[in-house]
Length: 120
Image (cartoon, rainbow, N blue to C red; front, top):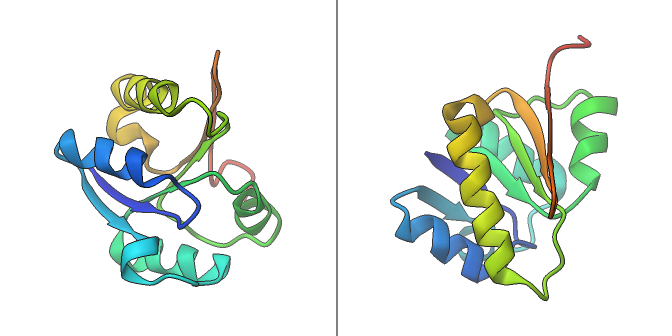
């Protein structure tokens, strides 16, 4: 799967995805300092799922109607990187390519997911 990992995502989570044979473009490596709007534009241009820990993307996508292939928002504290990897792997297993076209929130005990364009 093709991912764009936001700058706020831990390098260990990016490394995990890469060990699972995912194609990951990491903003911290490729274009540090991009604005959120530019991150969304890059995800769209590259046709990549956006992996982030920044809730501001919800506002950009739903209120400001910015188009993005899909968003995966991690809502697990940085003190538990193993749980982050485990839950991300579970979300990928559950939704697969279905993550595209959705805004998915990954929490410790549940996933929340909704279509990006259901209200448009």
